[in-house]
Image (cartoon, rainbow, N blue to C red; front, side, top):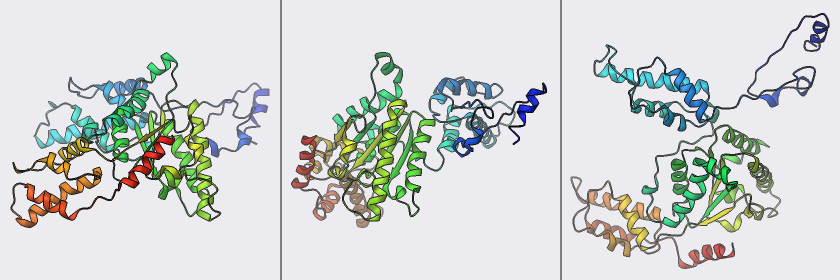
Length: 405
């Protein structure tokens, strides 16, 4: 009624313009979103890297910055931040520098904000649009993962390149892939590989599991799925990661139980959202599973999971590298030969090798709580009690699936 009364004002020569703002446009009654009422709709999107740089320049005009502070690098690391988030980031960086100066009694204004203060602020202040569903990615680098050189290279080309060099793909007219599925035996670093790729690409990281999506309330899982894709779009470049993808994307038609019905609804929503990625830039879906044969065939076609990567158990050289990674912080005796240990761990997964190193340290402490080094006998004692969970038959089943693809 109030909006319609505007017509009488216009007829009498009085011009009244109604401006409204909302962050939940879908909740607005459609009767208001027609011509004659709200004639125009303007979407205010999250700022891109250049816009974030200009906003940071504005907020830091009067702040004492160290000469080596790189606002361009800070802007690049703040995917999904809106203006208010960047203002809070500047405030937290200032407070961090002020607290450090107070500890060192530099309260006379001779202190400056350093890159360490910005890194601290970045760890405290996150993008508000991702609260509730974003998972903070651990500082996992490619060097933290032993072996798997070919898989790492393919992930770098398929994840890092499209997200960090999107303008190069656009220049050549090359469409980046939409999804990647990693499959292989449990404990072979599939999830760790995804986290390392997300960290290297400096992308916003959203992680979902089957337990989160299966809800006691009808439609809640599908709503969470749609909301995650929407937030990922706002925080682009983004990676959406589905752990235990066989739970979310199980084959249809298996049974008529309640969980099966929920699974089919989730799968239909996932298919719809992934099909929409062709029109959206900067979003990549990654998934990991131990049961690739349980994934619905509709997801395995180009345009959805374009790339299917088999993550095998580590070979000898990979086992040696994994042992080196997990013993970097340990003090080893001169008699420890990691190559000999690697030869004795055929069929061991990366997770089992990590456990081997940890248990060797515990055995050394059990023997002598004041021990200063871990010796070869400690590794050998643990090896005698361990049996790998994998068998050659299991590995062959994964290899045969890969050959079919």
